[in-house]
Length: 623
Image (cartoon, rainbow, N blue to C red; front, side, top):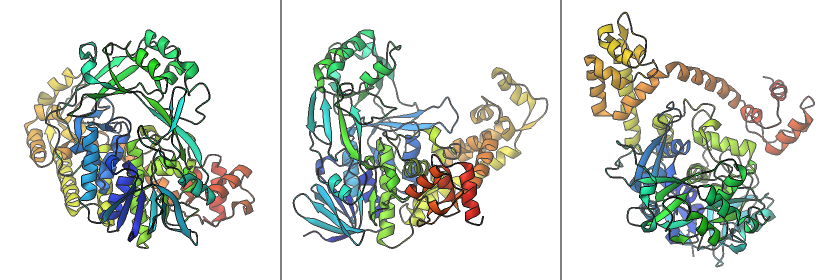
């Protein structure tokens, strides 16, 4: 009954939507299979996109031609650039989103592509012939066939929800778990494991007293995620901050004996950097309060997401403890928080393209690979969708290096190191984070996306225009001289040493606390040059300032990236028998035989492989 497809995507969460969108935009005929057409791109946890390192990922997805940045902008209710007080490598965009609008915008985007078909059912197995996937088997007995298959099952694989001492199957509150697929994959030889995550209660915003909380407004001049034609917000909804207290903690502890976290009901690993409230008060017993972010769920709803209060304690304990938080004294709960355990497949079983090593043309993306977070899932979906299309048309895989994108860092970490707890991206994971800034994702990746047939020509033209303006402004600032009489009042005000002779604007901007805006105030020539570029492209002005202020650091990191890339260019055969290389350590032989790294660079990042082992490999290869 179903047609033969180029690519089948199983699951319509953040990874599945990006995978289907990417493959379809590149020309593949795509079937998107979901258990519920009404929950496409559902924000299962907090209604927000981006944040530290995650915002950089959304910008990278957008630069390549993906959809998350566009959808985030269209459904945003607040925009903030985090870490502005730190260096630009740490600046991270974040939106608060309307949960319903986000889901609808993704569905609209997918429905506008004639290459995407939809089917509502549950996948229970994959069809494999000659060690190559040829389709999927569905719960209602239908079989769907394709040249490549992408599995993005989220938390649904044998999902088990925990609420106090109660347990019930489910992939999300109110939705059933997906069964059968894990067992089918294990029969094919895949290794599976269990992980857990959690979510906080949702409450009625009409029952909260916001006067007892700190208000958290969006940016005064909000930006946006997408480099395209979406619009920044003109009005924004505020969030609020409040805190737990010792009374809150005392009440929460009364439920510890019934907590699945502590009574042994949950045996799997949860996200280290997003712990439950009971985990926080247990691990940080010396802290007498914890921050709670009070986040609206959308423009037209009173529902509130209680960020920082993830819990699986009995609902009556949750409710009693919550009412001790300032502003929550009369809170009405819509639904309690809960924890969920689900199956995942250790990602060391994948190639860098996210294709499985065991079965050709089968790709895994998202939480099935042991990650946590919408952004981490979305970028994997994008890459899996791209590479599923590439496989369907017999083209080379598309792989990003660690020096090209946070996406490259994430996938390399997963493939090389694996993970035994939900993996979350941080700026600290990227060794080239000065190069991988949120402001230059378009320059790094749009040309690559365009070459794939994913990014539009208009996006490429916009990047090239911005690059010309940056080059122009840099040149002008290097030629404009600023006299002591112009600069010194401003420098003394900023407690910076005065100058005794004329200095170039490009040199003054390298001083701490001196900004391009300061130079515009004191130098008419600078003001003229900046205003000309600002009218054409404001982002070019910001980026010029970053490039001049951090020029030495950027050049040094580019040199390190080039050295790193030389090791990445030395290929290793998938059939290499490391046991036969006598001088390798026993641990290196064991790890390398299991992982089968693609390059010397990847081998060097494997835990237990020493620099001397790498030297042995290079000698073995005649390098």
